[in-house]
Length: 169
Figure 1 (tube, rainbow, N blue to C red):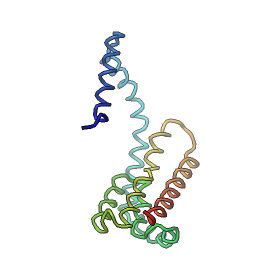
Figure 2: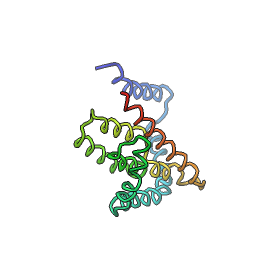
Figure 3: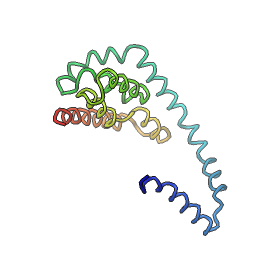
Figure 4: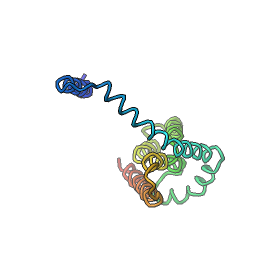
């Protein structure tokens, strides 16, 4: 076992020792923090429920498959294998759906194949943009269009660059 495995327990021990030294009641502080988190959770919940339902509907309605078929030639032109275009499309919406697609791609093509490497890079270099946006911007009242477009562009650019690099590695 390396020393890295001891970092988190050491941090907790240091925190508890500091709290004892300063005579801070940790349990009371913890419960106060939880009380403050409840209104935040209640304000975020409708946004999370909406994005989770919409992403499931997007996948199960067949719209995702139709858009994937439509965008496959464009993705192929940019160097993204057509086999992973569904992963590229689903990842911004659903983390669990993209994990299932990644697992399926690994089972079909193998993790060490070009397609497997590109799928791993696409999965690792992108984020569930709509879920994260719902969490971060739920209570802010800010407009979401610009940050979402920037995040989607960054995801796609990372995937294109990653697939390009996978050709040489």
